[in-house]
Image 1 (cartoon, rainbow, N blue to C red):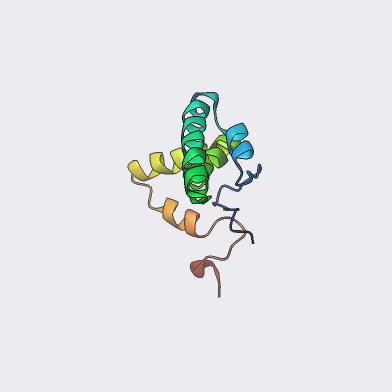
Image 2: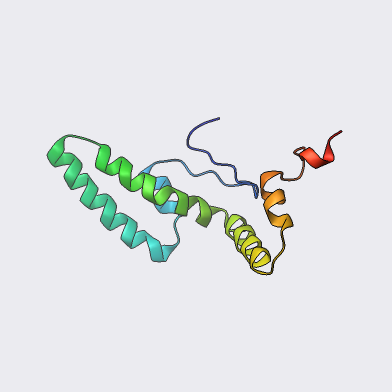
Length: 109
């Protein structure tokens, strides 16, 4: 599995590459300006230092948000789990650790 892919228990339908254009395209419009400003500042720093690390840091910081924006059902699932935990539902943790289709120790013989 690629390091660029995370698969939360909610699943990822829309993959987002770890590139500036892909992250920018996946972000909500209200986040794009902040991403672009950080990316441009990192590009200047990368140019001065002849090192791409500043650009990689910006991509690494924004990529998880881009994945959530491209897959709103993931955030909806997280929000629902938080609501259930706040309501005192202890089964949420087992469902997160053992999503449907994966064996749960108490379900195996």
